[in-house]
Image: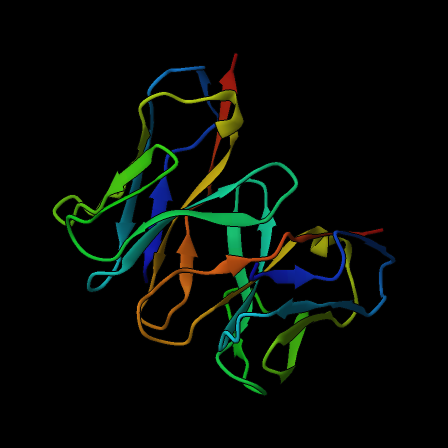
Length: 111
Length: 114
């Protein structure tokens, strides 16, 4: 079945460092891909999405590009802030409109 | 502001109790979902519904049931709560078809079963 694999955390960075969180997927066809963020004590918020190959999703300085050839959707940000500390989930939407999530990656940004 | 509202942020229940977790959305979404979130396991789908009075089992339905009598409301029921059901429960909703816009999530209910 469809699945999502993302790098284990926690990822600890200093403020203004470059961020990459890896995400790869296994799916039949070409699913839509998403990144969600969960701040402490809250539910998940949609961060960005891409619906077809080579699409780039972006929001709040975060970017991810849908790479069909490597089945990847890595999350990047050029300069992280303390306020970016959260758990990040990569997900795909299957053909029956269900979201399948990775296990999440905790990001800790130190001042 | 459109939203998904879960009735409780924190709940403490005793083993064996029947527990109801309520979720209401105001976006006229067809699809609604219940997940549980546990450290290291990510989000696991319990049940989902594509329409009123319809329900489908997700990946971990054992020990749970659901009710969807109205389009905007999707309830998760723990028939007889057990300590291994201590978890964060997240409700979500989405449009039924067309562009895949992802889900809108509620803030979650942290349930502790003692």
